[in-house]
Amino acid sequence: MSDLNIGKKIAQIRNRKNLSVRKLAELSNVTPSMLSQIERGNANPSVNSLKSIASALEVPLFTFFTSEVVKEDLIVRKDSRKKVILPESDNVIYEMLAPGIRDNFEFAIMTLYPNTSSSNGDISHTGYELSYVLEGEATLYLDDDKFTLYKGDSVKISAGINHRWENNTNEDVKVIFAVIL
Image (cartoon, rainbow, N blue to C red; front, side, top):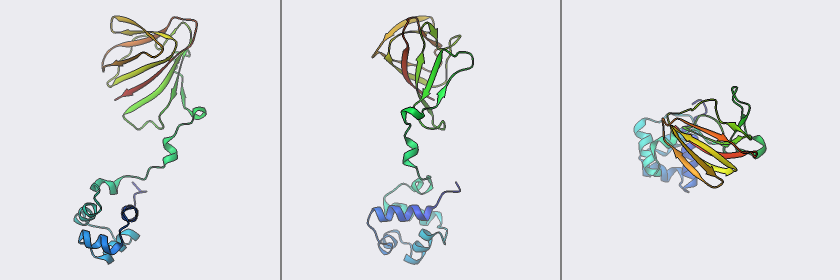
């Protein structure tokens, strides 16, 4: 949290709401001098002062403690996707669609080459998976059941269900999926 600047965040929100330092000071019961020092980083506000400022700005208190998001980092360009090829199988490529790996979900496109499987055996995970067949025809094993999914079909695989994707055709299969942990 070394990049956290509470004063700067207060000033940004205040300016966005077209409030002067004096007006925000009046609304929050913090002196204009103290508010100015907080915004410039020359004073550390008490928790009570932060609560009052948050209330006056009509924002949740935690707003002051979140890091600034670099909007460009939220975009993954088609030619810049991270590709994952699992060591046990070079027949499957996962292209990561979401930036970073710190979130509670994974979002990817799986390409299954002809006559291959997504894994050597069935897998399961703690979260659930939402999948949509973008191209081709895939066989999906859910525990002991077998299903054929076609382009445009989708499925929700609940947590703990053993599953495996197969491509038993001569064409690539592409499946877009999100795993929510």
